Length: 362
Image (cartoon, rainbow, N blue to C red):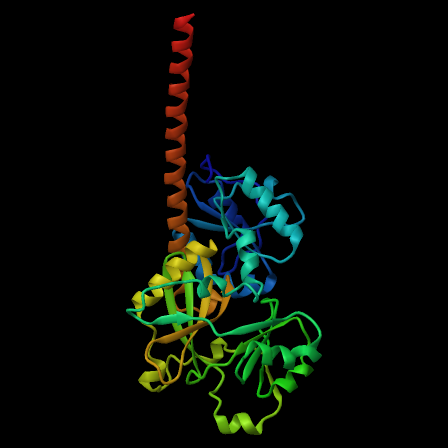
């Protein structure tokens, strides 16, 4: 939160959509108060997320996106209301953690330590596995999995001991990579390079549900996924098939003519309970879930992946959802700030009463 109405001293990138740096300076130096969002994103994320239509809508709502200069101290920039980030590296995490301690009035999306757990597939799904949600709208679980940190020659024995069923999906342990492999026999897994996670493949009609979460807002889209595997195929394919990723925007299934048993979206009440609990447990507000429904069931769902700050640019109506979220965050911060000021005033008055009482007794 800013304590002043003016915003100055930013490093700004050239704005698109006929919005020049001079226009921005005029707006910043005016009396209008803006919700200032400092962003530290990769160039790829900037291109996909900060699209002209988002920035244009944000400006009409009084939101200003300002690039954070990573070559300068973060505390010397701003002031910011919100810091939006998705950068890797321990150095950046330290910078951001120090900034959170010295600037508690600024909302950081999201806490670096919370994000790190999602980046490791060994721990990514633990919070989902620990859930005990009412099953009135369906059951949610995670596939059984096994972590292989080294020595690919030991994989067949490890798979046998763990009792995992084939086929298996192999994913890099670091969730920064979306590549995966599908193995039809455990011996072919020896060709893969650890560290990785082996996850039981569950037939799901070749459809995956991408559940985008932006604060309390939820948006669900269908994506084509890996095809089902029959027992006959399993016996005839002793090899590993590599895929760049499970799904992508180009593989949208929202307009496809799907069997209702396969394409029907998960119940809204189920998703609301699930995402609310995960927000609380993970401490994140910007993420998405990859969910599948087990083929042949009506209400058996599995979360197979969680992504922090996913490709929101692919989410329908993301501009309105995201800007509304930023405004709600700013309002929450203002309410908290007013509460803290009142708390401090009350505390100060009580302190003076105690001091006066002590002096009167002398």
